Length: 400
Image (cartoon, rainbow, N blue to C red; front, top):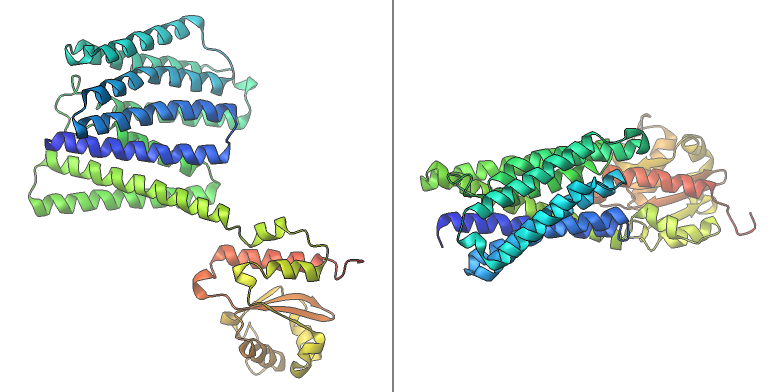
C-alpha cells in the first residue's frame, strides 16, 4: 500500500472510531429522544463511510469501497433529517424530492460500480452533498426564530457553524476535484467538530477547560508531527500526512479517554450522588450511608463526651463559624500558641485527620476525615462543604 492510502486509511479509521465514541456518549445522555435518533442516524452514516472506506483501502476490497460510497450517497438524507428535526418542521417538498432522488440514484450507481469507470460519479456526489448542505444552511438561516426556544436557536447556530466548518474537510475527500491533496481530511474534520460539539455541551468554565485541553492536544500532535518530519527529513507532503495521522489518532484517543472517564464516574457515583441516593431519615443513618463512600470509609465521628480531653468549652468558640477545617491550613489565621488552635491541631494530629467537618457546635459534633492529597481537588473540597451543610441540617434522630 502506498503512503497516501496508508494515511487516508489511518485518518478514516480514527474518524470512524471517534464518531462511534461520540454516538455512544450521545445515546447514553438521551437514549430515546427523537432528535438523538436523527443525530445517531446521520453520524452513523458518516462513521460507516470512514470505516468501510478505511477497511476497503487497507484490505484492497472493492465491495467495501462500493458500500462506503453508497453510505456517502445517503449522507444528504441524514443531513436533511437532522435539519427538519432541528427546525421542527418539514423541508419544502421539492427539496425532499431532490435529495431523495439524488441519494437513491447515486446509491444504486455506487453499488453498480460506476464510480470505478467514470470520474463523473465523484462530481455528482460532491455536487449533491454540497447542494444539500447549502440548501439546509439556507433553511436554518431563514428559520422562524420565534417558534423556537433560545436554546434551540443557539443549537441551530452551532449546527450551521459546524456544517460550514466541515465543508473544507469534506472537499478533500474528492480526489478528482483536488488531486494534489496529500491526504483526505474528512475523518479529521469529523473528529475536530465532534470534539468541539462535546466541549460546547458543558457550562462556561467546563467549556474553557475543554477548549484548553483540545487546543493542547492539537498543538501537541502538530509539534510531534513536525519533529518526526524533521528527524526523518521528509517532504512537506509526508509531513502533512504524518501530522494528519497523529492528530487524528490523538483526537480519537482523547474522545475514548473522556468517554471512559464519564462511564467510570457514572458507575462510581460521587459524594453528593451518594447522599442523593440515600434513604436515611436522620443524621446517624446518613453518616452510616456516607461511610460506604471511599472518602468516608475511615471517617471518625467525635461528639462532645469523646472530646473531654481537648476541653470542648475552649474548642466551641473557635468552631462556631467554621464549616470545614483543613489541617494543611493551620494555624487557621490565629496565633499558633492560642489554646483553641493548639487543641485543634492536637486533635487532628491524634486522629491523622486532614479535614474536620463541624456538624454542630452545641453540643460539639465533629466528623474527622483522612483524605489523600491526590483526592483533595477543588471539586472534593466543595463536596465536603455541601455534605457538612446537609449533615448540619439533618434531624439528629428519627423523631426529630
